[in-house]
Amino acid sequence: MKFIRTTNMSRLDWLKLRTQGIGGSDVSAILGMNNWRSPYQVWAEKTGRLILDDTEDNEFIHWGNIMEPILAKEFEDQTGKKVFRPNKEFIHPKYDFLRANIDRDIAKEPGFLEIKTAMEYKSSEWDGDEVPVPYILQVQHYMNVLNRPYVYFCALIGGHKTVIKEVERDQELIDTFTPKLVDWWQEYVVADKKPPVDGSNSTTQTLRELFKTDDGETIKLTESLNGQLRIRKQLKQSGDELSSQVSLIDNQIREAMGTASEAENDSFKITYRANKKGTRILRIKEK
Image (cartoon, rainbow, N blue to C red):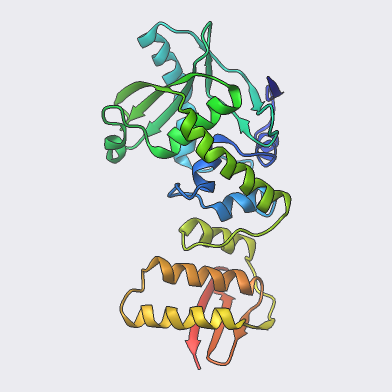
């Protein structure tokens, strides 16, 4: 099994390592099955367009990291199994960009342990045999990379309830999504080609990060975007301002404008300038 040792690796170096391949948390995002990350965001991260931050992402991740060793000990106490940190990034034997960073390995058996925390309102996602889809995709990807037969979850729900579940390898599922990951990596990361934007908040925030400032330039919009702007006008007139289609079109405009301050065509004029707080505001007006 090929791997890269991560012992004593700084968080920044670890984040840089993560850009070199597809990890478990990337799978659901690439497949469009993640509410928090989009394929466009993953592409921007893997191609180095988003600046790496060596601080903790947010308080949820911060407390998740604090709880991880506590939950690992709880798993040992409840099951009698012994776990340990592998301190390795594992590499798929055929595709070196398919990677796995598991939370804990289990002594003297082929399974491994993934540790999760969930808010109380998410508790139904762990009812019975249920496991959230992004986590299922994550561990099936790990089992593929490591060639393992099963995994255990130890999840803390709402800060007071511990759930332990075993999930077996699903080869049919692995064979379904793995070619999609391989094709996505080759088409967008290796070829350095932008994936299509979508209307997700993740893509919106990524575009705002990529094009933080405007340069005063005015650009001409393509005819295809003019058609999208007409659709946008109809949606807003119908009162469907929160439509995902409106968000999609807005993101298409943001990407097309980049750092330009203004854009126009025969029918529309658009400004995309920073306000006093430094946030760029998209304004679209029909001529």
